[in-house]
Image 1 (spheres, rainbow, N blue to C red):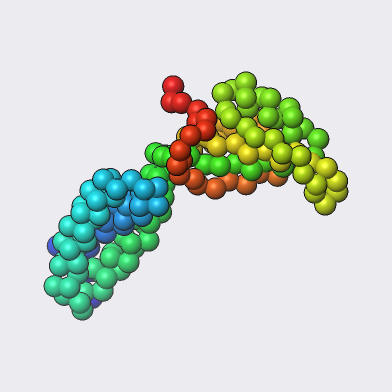
Image 2: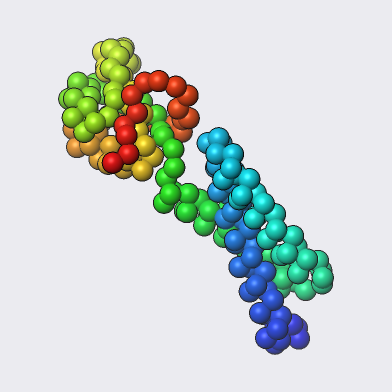
Length: 177
């Protein structure tokens, strides 16, 4: 119980927590960059993450009987994952492919998205209750919320799914403004 009274123990636990948060945030971002094919950024994040990991591990292994350090390590791991996801959402790199299914307003959604500068492919399709319009639209992830709002405004009943994609070649991709 003496450990709870030691300011040095709390300082080291705080340091371990902060380093582990940084480590896992970098790791989460690195994995996301790997899946998006960003080799250079993946290398930099991987190198940085490993350096921080080794440093924090040294602090924890120095005294495995210190449960405060172990708790800080675990809490930093969990917090770092969530923080990394939050950062990645804010950065919003890459493209997302939207699949929009609308029973009645597919043409109106397509027209509006085209007016806003997005490429849309319309496909007539048959759903459970009859004919529907299937729309494919690839957008920058940072524009996703704006496009979702547009769809919702025209057809609140539309069924929308999204997948991360990597452009390979050709086609129309909305240019950065």
